[in-house]
Length: 82
Image (cartoon, rainbow, N blue to C red; front, side):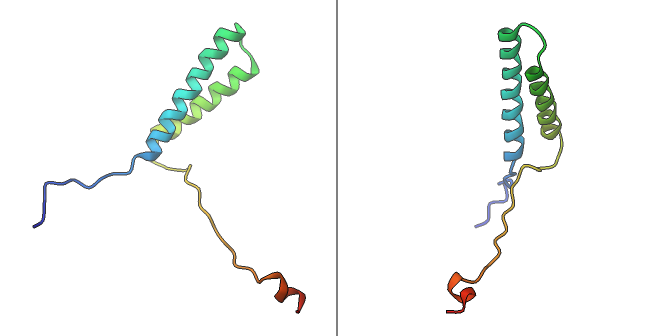
């Protein structure tokens, strides 16, 4: 029997990745402010990365997914002519 009440699951792992990354970057910013006490290059870097995470989290694209391509090659013995 079919259950028509079930909704399809939506993959939101890309949202979780950017949400967690943004949280980590913002915590790093707070730590830099507390430890350094003044604006530094490292703080600017963390802020830039936090902005990047926010933009990706707020968008509908999942650019962080990695793709893998395998190129078949001949074994070494065939290349050497044995």
